Length: 107
Image 1 (cartoon, one colour):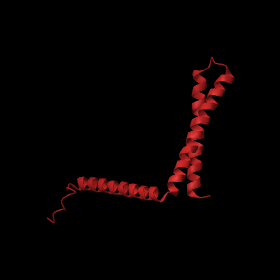
Image 2: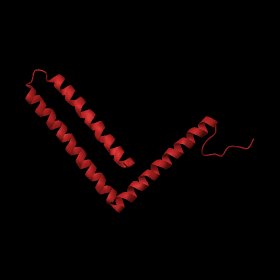
Image 3: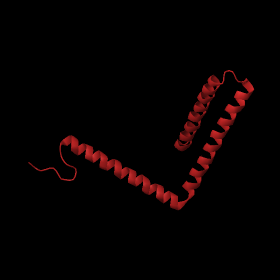
Image 4: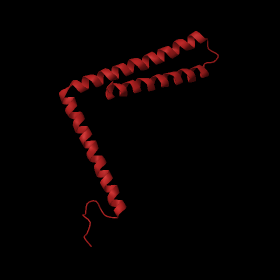
């Protein structure tokens, strides 16, 4: 199984766990409500979460297939990488006691 598929399976598992917790908390708050009514409301919420997640995954799929969006994503990750590198360099300079904009003096 691919790493991507494993990753999305993990996402599904995590949202399933969240759905179960949501159902538990909802049931606790509605102890006086009839069980069928409570179950129906929880099922509606879980179904809506599933629908939203499905639409989000479809949008991700469409975006990945779009060449312009893929280029935008590539540039966004490049910018993220540059920002992280600059931050790490600034932190390293601060630890060394030098200014990142000025090269260290040889003395």
